[in-house]
Every structure is written in C-alpha cells, then in structure tokens.
Length: 354
Image 1: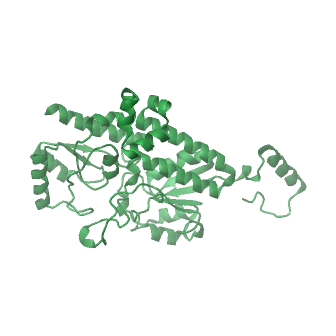
Image 2: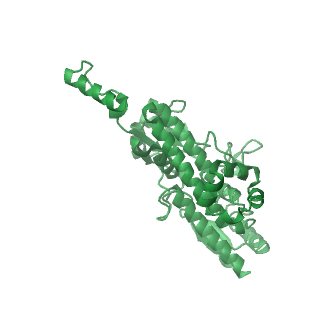
C-alpha cells in the first residue's frame, strides 16, 4: 500500500513515515481498510466478525431474496468494481448472476483464480453431492452438492477460518487481528452450540470432534455431563428424530446437524413450483406420517404451505434461512437463534398435542 503518491518523499514525510514504523512496526498502519463484497448476507456477517475494524463488508443479497434468482444489476457491478476481496457461497448457488457481475466490474483482482476471489465452500462438509450426472430433468440439483451449507454451525466455523486465512494473505499486517477475531467467533459459536458451561469444561474443538464421530452423547453420559448440554444443541436434543416438511431443499444441513429430518418437500423437484398433483401426494404423506410443522422461507409464497396445513392439520412456520431475512436475524448467531427458537417451539407444540 503506497503512503504517498509522489515517489520523491519530502523530508517531513520521511520523518513521519519513520515515526509510524517506530510506533507500529509496519508502514501498513496507515493502510486503508480492505473492501470486501460477499454474495450473501450470511457470508457478510461472518466476514465482519473476522475482519473487525480492518475492512468494510457489503453483501449483494440482503437475505430477503432467494440468492438463486438474483439479476446482475448495475449496482452490484459498481460494488464489485472497488472490491479487494469477493467471497461467494459457491457450489453454483450464484451461477445465474455472478459471472456477469464480475465481467462488468472489470476488476482483475477479484476474478476466479486470483487471491481476491474466495469460494467459501472449499473446506466445508458437503451434503447431497450427486452420485450420477445431473440433468435438467432433476430440477435445480447442484452438481457439487447442496449449497445451503451455512445453516450447519460447524460449516460457519469452517467458513470463518477460511476467510481469516485469505484476509491474512491479502493483508499480512492484520493477520494477528484476523486470527484473534476468528478465535473469538469460534468461541462464541461453540458456546451457542453446546452451552457456555460445557465448552468451559470440555472445549469447543473436542466437542465438535465428538459430535462428528457421533460420540458426543455417549461421552457426556460417561462423564456425567449430560445436564451441562445447553445452547442450540441442548434446545433441540429432546426433539431428535422429529420430521418437518419444507418448501425447498434449503434446510438439509440444519436438520442433519440437529438430528431432524425432512421426508417430504412442497417442491416436487428443487426449483420446480408445487403442482396440484404433487400437493395431493404431500397431503396424504403428511397425514400418514402425522407431520405438523411446515417450514417456509419468507421469500416463498405461503399458498401451497397453507393448503397443506389446512388439509392435514399442520402449522406453517415462516422463518428466514439467511441473515437479514427477518428483523430478528441481524447476524449469523441471531439467525440460528431464530431458527432454533421457531422450529423447537413448533415441534414442542406438536408433541404436546399428541
């Protein structure tokens, strides 16, 4: 980062530069903030937590719209033109509009393959990766797997580390701050997931390792720590095995992480609107399985969900799946807070009614 446009520094400028380097140890102390643009509000929330005051972060999608179907607006191109780092969800979520935005921006620093272009999915745990070639007859199936991975808190933890690594590469002077912010995000996420008491006794990394092996509950039982389980996992643990109807296949990661399942969706295939014949099948399936909770994102029409609920005696739960999708979801943590609260309340009511 150049401190002065004129390469011939004035003597006073040299003195000032020396003073800065004496105090800070690096001339980047006067560097401008990094300009980060993310494709979704969820990535923006995590990026803000990791970057702290060393970057400005803006998002293309605000959480109130379906990121599959955005259009490449001139305002997006302007945002990308000045970006130092572009972060995308990847896995073809933005396939319909990302490339036109990047082409229009004419910013070589953020094109795919450059350090300023980051695919946040590179290290996450993927679900529903097709075992055979994807065709249009399958609907909106993504060849690299289901792209709604941010709804698994473990993947959010992984995303934070991925962003911290790239920021440290782009701005070495801020590397220590990025790592520190990332650790703080991880700690806060772990406490929300497992409860502060349990994280203090066992440690977040160990709890996640046990969770991934399917050994967490056995471990807690042996250590007589079952009562210490709190947070999101503690709230939903009594409801493990419950079934939920969803509109789109956007909840798979959340359901898998918390031991819930989605045996039927209102869409006959991903991205295909519900047809009368499919809804008739859904209604019969819901009645047979006695499912009462129908989960729908705010940007989808409630018409099909309300019909199924009326015919099968269910309850429609409208809940955002991205930061900013509803007023309560102001950041990543409050988003998962909201989902856990609404899903658990609906399932508890369902259980009590039986």
